Image 1 (spheres, rainbow, N blue to C red):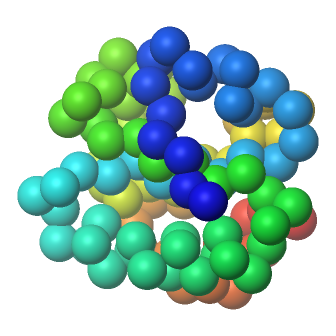
Image 2 (cartoon, one colour):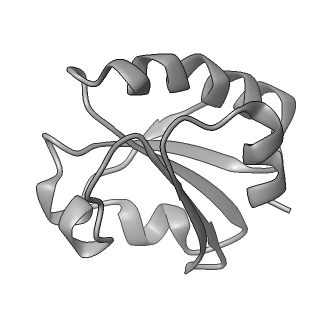
Length: 99
């Protein structure tokens, strides 16, 4: 199940384990293309927590992590940013990021 992240729950959700965060927006065409790939990753990898941040609703989070373009995928491991990729990613690229 993919969770929506906000400023209120971000620290709690990303604190433990591997967490993939998809920074996106409703109006973003590439984000719409990224979404089913992220969904497929979440289904295939139940050991990874998968979350989304709507940058229009959460500008403080986007600013905090320097999100300048979307979609941006970020991987957190035990609360620390471990990797980031800007632009459309395929399933294999996401899997490599989360290793």
